[in-house]
Image (cartoon, rainbow, N blue to C red):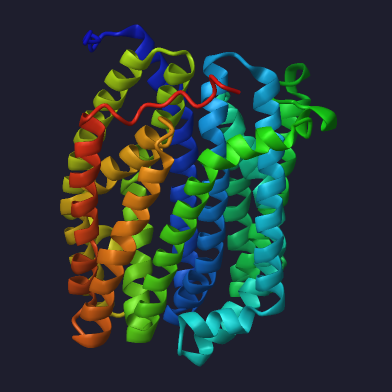
Amino acid sequence: MKRLSIKDKGFIKALVTVAIPITIQNFFSTSLNFVDNIMIGRLGKEAIAAVGQANKLFFLFILILFGVYSGSGVFSAQFWGKKDIPNIKRVLGLSLILGGAVSIIFSLAAILIPKTIMIMFSKDLEVIKLGTEYLRLIGISYLLTSVTFAYGMSARSVGLTQIPMYASVISLIINTVLNYTFIFGKFGFEEMGVKGAAIATLIARCIELFVILYLVYKYNGGTIIAAKFNELFDFTLEFVGKILKTALPVIFNEFFWSLGMTFYAVIYGRISTEAVNSVEISNTILNLFMIIGRSIASASAVMIGNKIGDNNVEEANIYARRLCKLGVYVGLIMGVILIITAPLFVNLFNVEQAIKKDVITILVVLGFISFIKILNGILVVGVFRSGGETVFAMALDSGTVWFIGIPMAIIGGICLKLPIPIVIALVNIEEVVKVVIGMKRMLSNKWIKNIVDEM
């Protein structure tokens, strides 16, 4: 097999063009969400738990959406490798239909039965009350998010990564300013607390949708994905069937994986509000250190998919190996920094000393395995899905959660009543098992499938 030089201009150009805008978007998203969580944290531990647990529904929703759009994105990336723009527009149209249906279901649940949802996640009456108020408002934004997400994923698949970056950055800055204004009652507004956070997010998502549609359809005369109505929905049942054959495993993957994450939240909620706080704060801080790794995973899906669509299987295989190595290096560096700086980040949150101690211990555990978590993201999202190996990716990603992670959480948290840092360590055994199986499959070179040749 031909080896690409580390100076290979094609690889470096593709990585820079795709990964940097995604990294900037993720940096703003994660950093501003971090600031938002600090603001909410000033309201007390019940507010942190309420918003964190209420957002578990959004987390489930967004990951199912990610399954819909990344499953479709496998085709968009490979179609772009063939420069087949009409089919890219058809994939976008089908994505909008599927994502819209998902968003309506989740919106109705959040608006109509918010208290029932919160009772699933917490036994604390104040947490349930605040979370119910938050969910009823935030549920209105889910349909907006599905449309924004569809256009953003399609833009990334064809290399227009700046579009979702601009929309996201503008939206998140506005969200942070409005959070400060509404939560604490600044600039003449009344203090609204958790309710203010929901209103700020709803306004920001309206603006984000407007910006992304403007950039797609109007800026500089429109882009290649600026599809008309008839172009979006000009597909046959046969076309839908071929898309769903590959996309459904990705959708089911994200559904079962996110359901597993939601089940973790239920378990932590049954342990204590303090346990929920520890996990929420740990995840908020961890997300800052996973930005580059997750960006590489998203870039991998585009880069590898484009190569496969162009029938350049050899370079796709080399790209996959190189991106995995890059992910490991990034993960090791970020893990060391996380372990060293954990106490500094934890002190930004207004919580009890016992919670801070647990968070620091959790972050040390996660710091040691951060390179594994990043590598798993690249393997599942970037390598196997872009290569059309979606059934294997589903079995690997969801299977390890449900057959290893969740049993460990139940045994450690519910049965043995172990401290939350030990429970988190047990849960992450699934990441180790996943990376061993995933690397073996990637090195076998059996994961590459050109799924658009027959369409």
